Length: 415
Image (cartoon, rainbow, N blue to C red; front, side, top):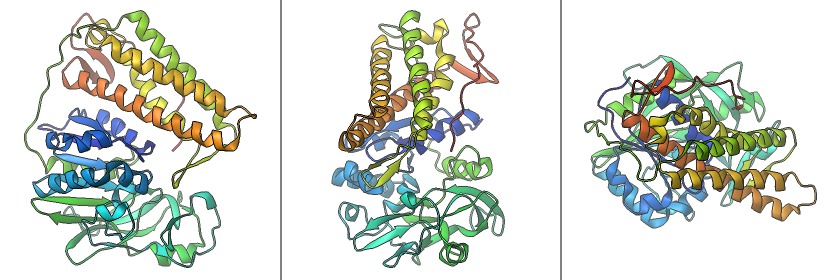
C-alpha cells in the first residue's frame, strides 16, 4: 500500500480507448484509492485543479485532441506549468508532441519528434488494419505489437531492462531538453511483427520509448509502451515512482450514507444487466466484426474489457453497508446504460444492419461503455477511499457485520 497518495486524474473522454481501465487493476493491487475519472468536459471545467497527476492513455489521438479542444489544451498547459505531472501513454504520448495538423497543433508542448513517421510505408505482414494511420501527407506506422524489451536510462536504473506492451505507441527522437528514461532495446517471444523483422529492428531499436520534459514547475512524461498494463508489474512500479514523487499530501473524502440509497433488488437488477451484456459480448467476439471509429480500429474483444472492469468489482458492493452509501439514481442510470450496451450488441449482430448504421451503433456502444465504466469505477474507488470497502484477499466492508461475498470466477478478457 502506498501512503500519502497524490490525486491522480485518468482521462476517459472522447477518443479514449479501453486501456485506461487497466489503472483500476493496478490501483486495486497497490491499495491506491486517490483516483478520479475525468472526461473532456471535466477538464474544460477546471477539474485538473484538483489532481496532482493527469494520465492520458491509449485511443485515437486526433479524437482526444478534438474532444479536449483549445480549452482543454490551455487547462493542461496551466496544470503542468504550475507543478502538475502529465503522463501520456500511446495516444496520450502523441498528444503533446509538436504538430502542424489541427486539432493537434493546439497541444505543442514537447518538441520531441516521432521516429515511426514516413511517406513510404513498408509492407505490412500482419494486422494491416492496425498497421498505420494517415498523418497529413505521411503515415504513422507501427512496426510491432505486444511485449517489447526496454533498456532503462532513468529512475536511477541505467542499464537495467524491463518489458512492457506496445499497441501503436510512438518511437521517439527526443529534443535536447528532454530526458530519455527508456529506449527500445529488443524483442521478446511475445512480440508480434507487423512488418519485416529486420526493417522493424532498424525502425524501432535505439529510439526512445519513454521521455521526461520539464515544463514550468511540472513535467510531461511520455511513454510509447503501456507501462500501466497490469500484466507488467515491474513497469507499473516505475509509474508509481513518478506518482509518489509528485505527492502534495493525501486527500481524504468522507463517505456517508446516501440520501436515497440503492435497494438490494435494484442493485441485483444492475448485476443481472451486466451479466447479460457480458454474455452477449462474448458471443460477438466469435464473429469477425471490426469497426473504424475515427482513425482507430475497434474489435469486439474491447467491449468485454469495459464490462469486466465493472463485473469483477460490482459483486463486491452487495453488502448492506456498501449499498447504503450508493445513490439509487446512480445505479438506475448505470443499469440503463448497460441495457443500452446489450441492445447495441444485439443490433450489431443483426445481418440486416447496413454497414453505415453498424459503425454508428458501434460508436454509440463504445461511448456508452466508457461512460458506464467510468461512473461505476468512480463509485467503487469512492467507497474504497472512504473506508467503506476494504480489500484484502477478500473484500469486506469496514463494519464488522457487513461481509461481501467472495468473487466467483468470471470470464477473463484477452489483451
